[in-house]
Figure 1 (cartoon, rainbow, N blue to C red):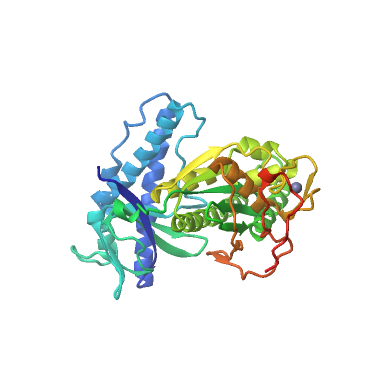
Figure 2 (spheres, rainbow, N blue to C red):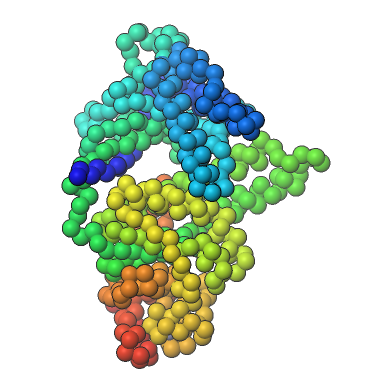
Length: 436
Ligand SMILES: [Zn+2]
């Protein structure tokens, strides 16, 4: 049996002139317009109880701008979204029908999909991307019949393999264009003999993700700054809402703030998931355990923290992203109950006489450690059914608006590097602190 694995390469894309940039924007805007028109008709049909598959011929309407192949790709992408919507409903999930790519008033989300025979991507010395555009756009911008739009590409492909449909979009947060290229890789790259380790995640707001692996690695993605900005925007939204005239509930500016807030969060979340999954892949992790939301909401979390985590993370979308990305790397995600892990002492197993103050966990046995990292370790040990020994110093990561980068490993307030005593010996009083 031959197994193939899907991977993605991401590139920054730069138009070579302002005219080319305008052409690219027109192409992406027309794609969003096609998506929205088609989606509007399908939503109308859906709410009227009619078939969403019977619509006007949008390929015909957009062939001039987009070209036949790209118009078809956008239509196909929309059909896929509707099919997964119906599949989710059949599974009893309460999901909303596919949404729009922005709107005309506030700005559309600029994005399109280019079939693999409609573009060429050369990387290396002269990195460039050439894509087909519709005849109307060629005429408007003075391209000849055989011309294609040439774009400069930055970044090296991480994966080699058979190339799939290219996604091209405008990244508002970074003010740049990006291309996402799915690649099908033969299975030999995945089948690392090491891939039998596991990892567990503790999800929070101050620390977005704390992770422990059975190889003894720990990762901590700090969320304080990110959350502070999220909250600032939320405050500004509330301020603007309080100033609305009576009878009005929103404004263009409020909607824009909402969108920006969501996009920033999604961007950080996407990048976090990819960074983490790549690290886990390198560690030979085959299974990742994530706590069940119901536990997160009930255990050891004040109402305010709940709200904060829930709203900021949009927990479900995080799990979806994690599962999708992990799948690309052949890693399985399992959602499991993590009841009590945040309250349980990793040394003596005490649950009642423990305290956490911000990041610091303290137990009456004298143990003190990093609350979230310890929780992920306890959760992992419970799921993997074995103790995790000899922890490396945790890797701490901070978001700088583009990347998660490692902080220098300075001494910490609460060092999670305590040497562990074996719980099964029953003597929990020997927690010595490794200050190396
Ligand atoms: Zn203890």
